[in-house]
Image (cartoon, rainbow, N blue to C red; front, side):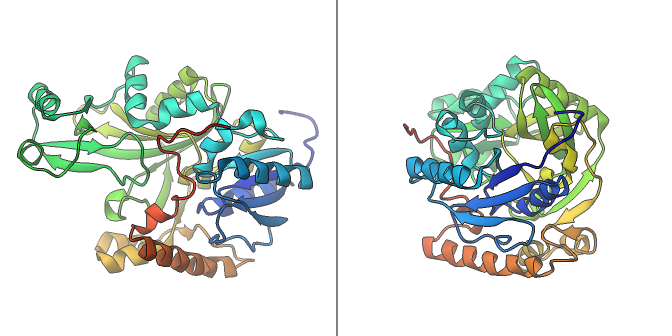
Length: 377
């Protein structure tokens, strides 16, 4: 796709509820492409943006998978779509159903997707390929738990489930609470705790080559397991390691990693992987969607209203101070209304969460999650 005249394409972006969707839409439009937007919810902040041709609502990929694929194919045929670009967990359903889709979809094959999406499988895979990971075990009973703690003595450990998002299942527990408490149900993953700097990465790749990689520090600890402030930064050593991983995986399209740089040794420990779009897509330059090698942008972006909401629930000076720096993800000087549309969709998600008695971030992926359910098409 390099060189020569690049023609306008019609792109179908799925997962429009994702905060990064506004930036990715603008990146596509900057290339002269026409963008069609879809999601299985109407709670989409950018559904009325002037940058798209049309927003189309579909059924749920999780609860009506076959109908969802039929909906996608209907959109593809009606609007003559050139390729599908997923931005959320519908990626897994589109990957699983690649053979049924009427247009190419920019996701890896489902076997590769699941090999890294499952946190336990990902840890084993990284270790087999020679990369650093925390000592890890999947324990089914107290005997196995005691064996792990005995072999890896420490004051605290990380426990989690193989599937999950926003760190919902991730907990830091003391050795005492694990041995004598009843705070977590078997089975679960247990890992040694790595102390250091927490990095997030996002890459667009093609056939094992990283076309662009953005790096930013995680601020999940101050934002209820969901980062709200994104400062794209350079870390050549980490970038080189990530590019090596992508090469060994022979990965194509979007992939993101959570990595901890150990404060004692400086080594990078891979914690988990999202084989789909994440907030790092905010920093992509348009050319990457033409599969061209390009550096990311280096800037600060944030979710102002989410940060304010978190700050009101748990005031922290650092959180408030960060509001002074960085353009909002939904801000555009020629379309200011979208900045306030996020308030409307945010309120709708909040009401839905209260009705189902779950956390707000949990409700936002409820109808598109891929956990360990088996489906057949």
